[in-house]
Length: 264
Image 1 (cartoon, one colour):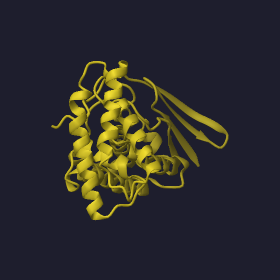
Image 2: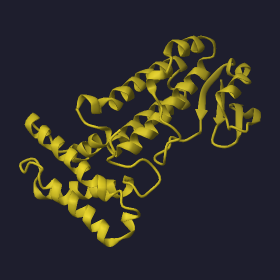
Image 3: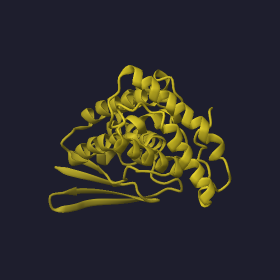
Image 4: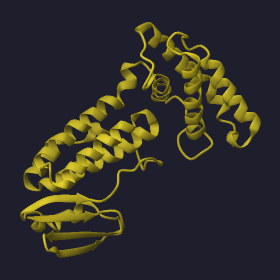
């Protein structure tokens, strides 16, 4: 059995075809735009051999600004299926790339979604290890992207903006469990908090000044005082205040990126 190792982490990509005795053939590739799907077309002959698994060494990003919004609804699955019939590993790589970019964006927007990174990493690890074939990986990636689409539109079902949903998730995940009435109350708090913070975090360099930092933190504490008491005992309430403060401090206006709390 042969194993193909693909390194996409640098401008100079490398492809190594190895057997049990070591590397049998290695190809170094260079592209001004980095390692792209176009380059895969140049090595289809290698991929058509009896390959046990494909090791994709580019990591899944954990944070950082996104290069551009990924709209999963624009993915043409029929076109990908046709491509899969001809060059299955190329189709899998394209789908994986879309999933990675979207997961990066969604977790940057909402840190309670970190489980999505773990799910995608497990899926790719199984593919790299050869314990999951190309067909299985393609189908699982399609199902995973469907899950991403459903999560990405959840704010609509919850009748919240995406930023309001982030605050709501911070206040409810992984606990407490809420009744429907309590969910309505917490959603109201999330809306009020974003509205109260919008002007305060628009102040230039608010994080560098003690007065403006204190004002933002005091606002968070004051608004979260309206959380229902029964599901939020004091220790849990304090923890939610800290989590919310940490998120606002890291994501609100004053750093590169979108202004938290601004409505579209």
